[in-house]
Image (cartoon, rainbow, N blue to C red; front, side):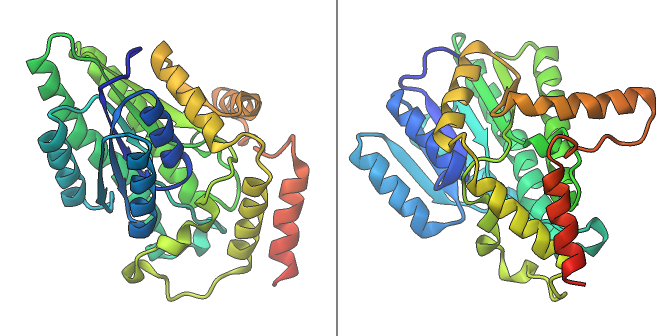
Length: 302
C-alpha cells in the first residue's frame, strides 16, 4: 500500500502512545480514522484534536479483549465509511514479576488485551477486508499487529508479557502465510518496538476492577515495574519515530518492523541457542546493569 489518501485506518489503543501517533500520521496522509480505546476521556480528547485538524474520525470506547466490542467496532467502521484498508491491532498492557508470582487475574488481563485483542482484530477485520476486496478489484489492505521485542526475547521478570507478545508474533506470521495461500490483496506486518516513551508502564491504570488481583504485590513485581518505568522513560526513539518507521514499512511491504534494530543481536543469540540446543541466551548480556537492578530489587525487598 503506497497511496493512503482517502483510505480507512482502524487503530485500537488509538487515544495515546503509539496508537495516537499512528492516528496523527494517518491523518496527515489524508486517511479516514476509526479510533478505539478503553480510555473514554483520552479518546474524546484525541478525537477532538484530530477533527480540529480536518480529519474524518469515528471513535468508540472499546475493550478489545471482548469479541462483541471488536465486532461492533468493525460493523460501525463499515457502516460509516464502507470499507477498511489499514488495521492496527495495537492496544496493549504490561505486567511484570517472577512468572510463578503472577496471579490468575494478571494472566487474564494481559492475555485478554495483548493476545485476545489481536485475535479478535484479526478474526473480525480480515473477514471484513476480504469482503471489501471481493467488491473492489483494485483493493489493497494491510494489517499491523503490535508485538514487542519481548516477542522475540524472553527477558526475566516479564513472563506474562513475553508470552502474550510471542503469541502475537506467531499469529501474525501465520496470518501472512494464510493470506498468501488464498492470494488475498492484503499484507500483514508485526511491529516489535523496544523501550519507547509511552504510557505502557502505567497501563495498570486501565485495569478492569474485576481483574484486579487480591494477592499482595511481590518484590519482583515492584522491581520489574521500576525497571520498566526507567527503561521506557529513558527511551530515545519516540512514538512519533515508530509511527514513521511503521508507515514506511507498510509502503515497502516489510513484514518485520523494528524500532531498535540494534537489539536484534540478542534475538540472534536466542535463536542460535535454540538451534544448538544450549541453555537460553541471556537477553540482557549486553546490558548487565539491568539484570543487576532486577536482582537488587528482588533481594533488597525480601
